[in-house]
Image (cartoon, rainbow, N blue to C red):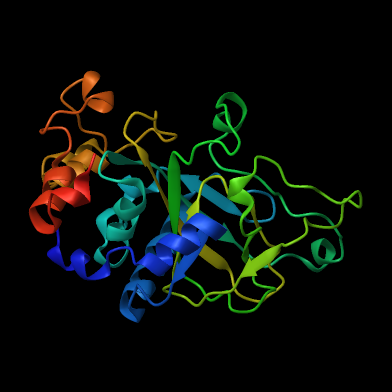
Length: 279
């Protein structure tokens, strides 16, 4: 793994914001040339997809196996150290999905409706006990288009809502919860967010198609949401990437990992010391 990730470890300010608000933003983690390259890859996948909705939107899961440039972001130096800084070393990539949101039609723009608010991970929000329920996973969203304006299909959050299991919705079904915040970022920005934060995609009233790559990281004992079509990568991946893509010595290796199961733990220990991998 690229040692330069040590230059971008989770800061105390980022940790506090994540704990208190459920998300934080890292600007300009992707250089312009990489944004251009990734946009071209997404455009190709969009053109090939048969899963587009009637209004042209696409939510394509399990994309990480489609191109090595997409694989390279799973341990991207500017972001990956922050992932294990939050979740620790017993982690995997359990989900990837890209979202393409074209501008809405004039007819759709005239319709008033609430955004599609949700917490990630489906049944975890029904079957896990506690209030708040445990974090279990987080996502990193790489924004490939500019959403600095609030009419560009922005990612929306209710800051701090990861600390409660429900949010109150107004009786008026055209209105969003109190505290709704559009996340305004430029192309090349990464947004980290707790799976429990109440969030939604905004409506795209701009003239630019919004494109975002989402990488979901979880503890290794959680069953992946994707098919994880990644076998073709395994032979030439380094041990840490193989861990992230689901490699293990056997079933017990997910809940009671041996040294061979979690090379990330030993990489962190080697470079940051014993206290960085406790317990």
